[in-house]
Length: 314
Image (cartoon, rainbow, N blue to C red; front, side):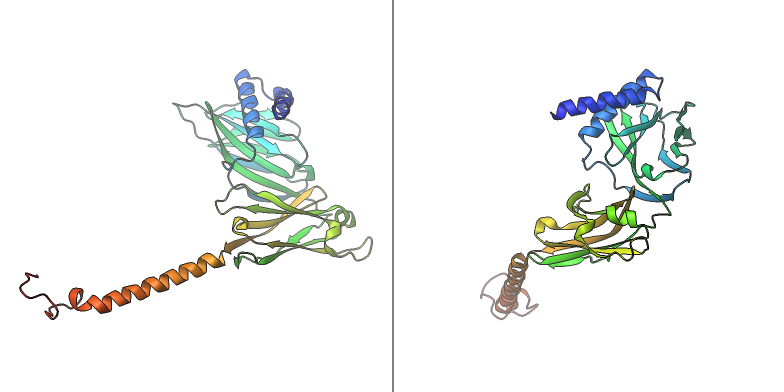
């Protein structure tokens, strides 16, 4: 079933890409990149994303570094992932200087000096999502940049706050992570959702660990059509060594996605800590005991007391 889905997505995006590119080589590269991106979407090779915030109606320019390599020519691609949609190709180019421009009423991709730019005109809330610049070279693929683009609508006035509770906890102890959601828009308040993500100590791609709807928080709803409307969401978890990592709350409402502060939680196993402490104490006692017994032999300097008679000691 999964290979069929991959093939379906590939064919759909091939049809979309055909409207943007006239060069057959670029078309072939785009299809190849799409297949790899969809299949390996969760791989750790994707860099940690940078968050950029803009408002509705603004003009946005995202830049991707471009460096021509004569021995191994490569191509660059802009793709984006939006919630609930298939991946989209926005444009492609060669690493060497190329005057071709991919243009639609909303997007433009073109080369600049040392960069491959994605230009978004008249930003909309629906443009909120992840934007990746992908470099392909023969059979290799590299995610050059990763950007989470947040397009805010001033009318929604949505905000997220989460206290930084980073620290060390004992294995088995419970941790309460908090996330405050506030908005002036009653409709946004009714439809929002809070998601909790965790990434490991190796900075691997974050994974979803918990989801909460607006009905599961402690909410101050205020008047029906007047704000502010506030909710407090608490994520409680009994920590184990495998739960060590960086936690972050994410709020989805009114076509927007907002991120709270990162909280780093490190779990310590009590039993191992106790055993290690005892081992260090025992080792220290043994070393001191050996020094006391043999100090006159090994640490006594010029003293000859206790040396065997007739021996040729230095």
